[in-house]
Image 1 (cartoon, rainbow, N blue to C red):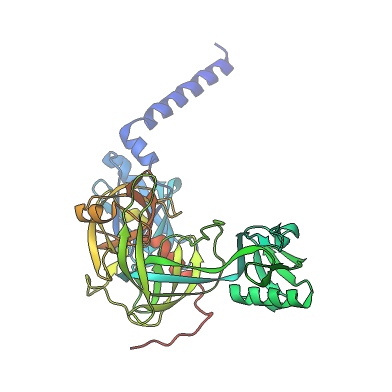
Image 2 (image 1 turned 180 degrees about the horizontal axis):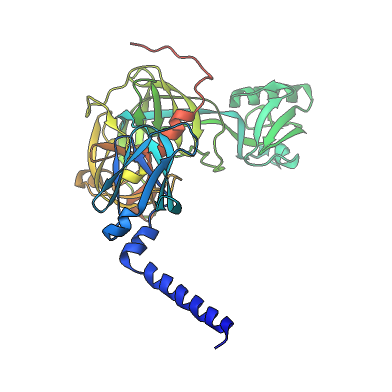
Length: 441
């Protein structure tokens, strides 16, 4: 047998041997250790390594900080069947397993997360957003003296979804301001020059108004909206900073489905007066009334894909909890029983039973959990999850796990939930410097 053939044979044998060894349960378990993991300060995690004692004795585990700024964020202790990791303080480290202390076999990036405690929400709130500019949501025909129909704005290139920012260099913030400026220019026989924002583009369009016999005013034939208002649910409140998080998803215009680019916004108290129950194919809805003199008042600073965030002008209370609850991070949420806090009658917060059916810990898009309502009273009153329930906090094992976000259209008993740590990250990163506030004590 030639030397080359012998080498090939030995190589095949070694590959098969390594493949066979990798299939053994201990080695397979070792190879399947995660590349990254997360722990909350004080939390422990056990990495079981069911290897023979002589092999374990030849393994060395070292902890190194890749950023050289968080020494001892995680400590590692040898146990009988492996190693125990414990998070000591916020930071990020690499835990490396080496053979004889020299040959690296496995490296795990461990993120140590700070603990948080917040007041759970469940409060019914009125949400009011004023958009940047006036949003075009449709075209309204102008009726002439002979019954003919005109669409001046459409003919000059205006599109649904455009934002009208200025008229003749003057910023416009309300529908009435826009209507008055156009009517004034029409009476003068001049064309108003509109500054229009379309995506990232800015356009200047001159549009000649037409006289409308029905309204007795000069118009350019548009349906517009300067903001939105609706009922939602507050998720959490931080008594240290007065910051709040609510809703769990972004607010979009109901006609154009475009995200509302906010100029300013507020939350106020709202009481639930009635509920339209949901059924397959048709979502239900809370019918609420805003109370501007109520116990809740605050400014919104961010309308993001994870909800609305801002700061209250007052101290909030929850009739179900006198103290704060810890925040559960995504890796701590599990399938099983939980509760949601929400209002279905007037302003009283109540707790209702749900089941967390699925958990997707790496999905941070507002759909990290699938939940199902099992509380008979809530099912009887609402049919499950309804509009206005978005933001209702999800409580599991005494911690705030997340918030309700969306309902399944074909089954209102089910819906999605967002992880609380996803909302918390946005809550802590929003720009709170754009206004000052006075707190009423």
